[in-house]
Figure 1 (cartoon, rainbow, N blue to C red):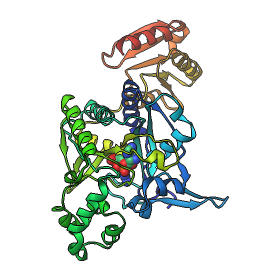
Figure 2: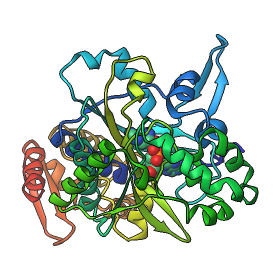
Figure 3: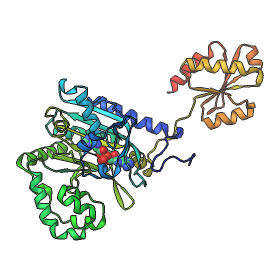
Figure 4: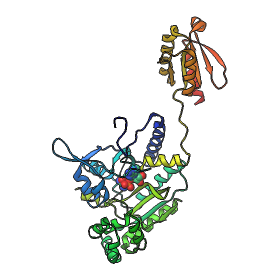
Length: 424
Ligand code: HAM
C-alpha cells in the first residue's frame, strides 16, 4: 500500500519529465501563435458547478466524480473536466467585459474521473485545453482544429483524422430526440439499464453507450445530421468548407456525440486505435449556452481538451519519443579527496556561466567518477587536481574525440561555456 500509488494514477518520473516538458513547450508555443492566453483554475470546485455545467445524466457526473464534503460541510468535487471551471473563471474574473473573443488555454491540468483504469484510461489524467469565448462563427472551431492538427503533426503524429459532427441546437435537437425515441422504442428491452434511463431523460446519451448490445442497435439509428435546422446545417457546412480550405483531413461522423451535455452544434474528436477499441486523443466542440446557463451573458463558445497521457502513449506506440537529453554537459572530476573542494567550487563557476555541470556528491574514486560521468552522458570531463592544479590549470577531456586541452583555472569556466554554446 505504502509504496503503491492509488489505482489509475501515475507518477511522472524524472526520466519522463523531458517528454512532458517537450509537449508543454510545443503547446505554449502554438497557443501563443494562435493568440490564446494561459488560465489556471482550482483543482476542486463546488460540486454544483459540474452538476449544472457538465450535465446530471452524464456518466461523468453520475458515476465518475470524486466528490466529498469539506470541513465546512460544502460539497466539493475534484474537477472531472476543464471547461466548467474555465467558464466559472471567465465569469468571476469578468473576462466577458474585455474585448471578445477571450481565448484561454490550460496546460497539463489534472483531471479526476473514477473510471475503470486501463491503457490510456486513468483516474487522474492531464489535459491541455483551449477555450474560446465570444466567437459564434465556425472559424472558431476551424482555428481550434487547425491548432490541434498542427500540434499533433509537429509531434510526428501524422495520418490522424479529425472526426466532426453537429449535434444541433435547442431548436433542432428535441426533434432528433423524438426521431431517436421512435427508432429505439421497441428495441429498448434489448438495451442496458443505463440506456433505458437515458431514453426518457436524455436519448442522445444512448449514442455514446459503450455496451456492445447497445452499440449494435444504435448503429442503424437515424442520423442527427438529417434533423439539423437550417442555421445549424449552414454552420456545419461552413466549418467543412473552412477545414477543406485549410487542407485539414476530416471525416463527418454522426456517431460522435461526446460524453458531456453542454455541447451545441459542432463536436469533434481525434481518435487513435489502441487494440480493439479506439481511444480519443482529443475531444471538443461548441457550447453556445453554457456561459448563460451558469449565470453569465449570452456568449457563444467552443474549445477542446487533449489528454497528455494518451499523446505520450501514442508517441511511444509509434516509437516517436525523442531520446532523453543528457542530465549534464560537463562532469568535474576531482583527482583525489584533496582536490574535492576545488572541483566543487569549479562546478559552481561553470553553473554560473550557464553550463550544466555535475561533480562528486558521493565520495567516489576517480575511476568510479568516470563511470558515473559516462552514465550521465556528458560530453566533457574536467579534471581538477594534481600537477595541473598546482600550475593553476584544469584539463578538459572531450569524450567524443578523447582530446585533452589545458586551460587556466580562472578563464576555464568562460572558455568551456563558449565551447558548449558554440556546439548548441
Ligand atoms: P473529454 O473528451 O472528456 O472532453 O476529454 C478530453 C480528452 O482527455 C480525451 O480526448 C482524452 O484524450 C483525455 N481523457 C479523458 N478521460 C481520460 C482518462 N480517464 N484517462 C486519460 N485520458 C483521458 C473534455 O473533458 C472537455 N472538457 C473538452 C472540451 C474543452 N470541450 C470543450 N472545451
